[in-house]
Length: 227
Image (cartoon, rainbow, N blue to C red; front, side, top):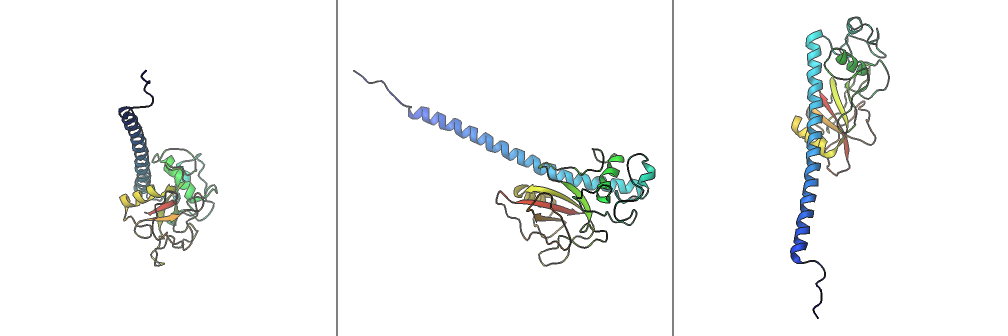
């Protein structure tokens, strides 16, 4: 008597392997598309905030957050007569990009831009990027009398003016954003990176930028762009 055939034929196994390959390829392609979308979103954040800043400055001849005429212009919007730290009209946006203190100029920046219709949202809260890291602004190291921050690897040429920071960026996204917007170097140029040990880290006094990006799959960076 003939025995019944058991198991799979080579053709059946080949078909299964092809299907698995197609599924894995589709998953990987989908993940890459999601990553690319996040990169574009982060780049758009930097570009959009820069455009809003210059638009506000052109319209009101003042810096958002530091605008001495904003309280009278938008009565009832919650803009205080004097900020929590610093002073209006001195060309400095006082307070750190990640501050949680109400009425600091770095938070009033968002309220004034929103009142002017340049960015979406309401109130003083900082927005978040595509990977849920905080986006914010500060002048230099964020102090009332700003000092340089994000110095280069030689210990000089830091940022002393207005800068936009976007935190919580995975290494692949951070490298791609710096490459598209600047020089792909974390320690030089107008876009610099700081490796994170905790969410939304301070970008403080004499902070040295990370010497070089390292794409490990686990590194997280804060990027700051000088305006």
